[in-house]
Length: 340
Image (tube, rainbow, N blue to C red):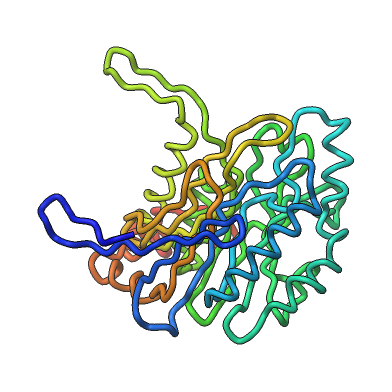
């Protein structure tokens, strides 16, 4: 692919994409400083039913990410099993088979051996049985050293849409903060991103540098405003794009989002794809296809530095804290100052 021309005639380099196995690999650089973070986002479809097929796809994607110098690979929500569906008689046994405790050996024998000094972690989501009973929707941060299944590198989805409440319950942990060589990261799963309290706590209380969002976010819903000549068939997908940009800009954090793409094998639900990267300014830097599987790689992302640039311009959290303060022992804020 040759450099294209901007409308004003100025050149802009469009780097080529490459087909590797069945994956279209899109590779970009944020900076020339290779000590910064390189991420891989798997904008992929899960086969339903097809746990073993999905495991093979995840492993092959990880191998490509490793070969391309990725530090952290991120996969969509339910990339091992695919999303749930209405028929509980067929769905329940399937998701029981997909529970991560049944696939620990696969992680240990196939995924973990890929890790080295560069390829350091995989973010993978799936079902698990909770300590208080019932199933949980859990995101695991798998690396070389941690107890990824039973330890603290795990986030349980908090907010559940109606169909998921049939199968899973709300999480046992409300937030997960992980300190990394590149900054402090928080985690959300799909529907969680719609709730301001959770992301506000990450940004204001925990002061994370980035939020990693994994999702199986759908595309289609109709909204019409006929007298304004406005309408869309892809309202849910449009919402994904709007909310991620707003969360990044409002909270001055990176939004690193990985979503499923394609059509569900049983329910025929269509997923939006659109995995991508939003800077702490709120600007979208890059985004994957809404229709096709892609492996998106972005090298050398200055996580802390770009966040600091935004804070140096306007520090929203500081200005918020000048008016509001946390209520001790509660997940709330008040304008009443101590001693007043």
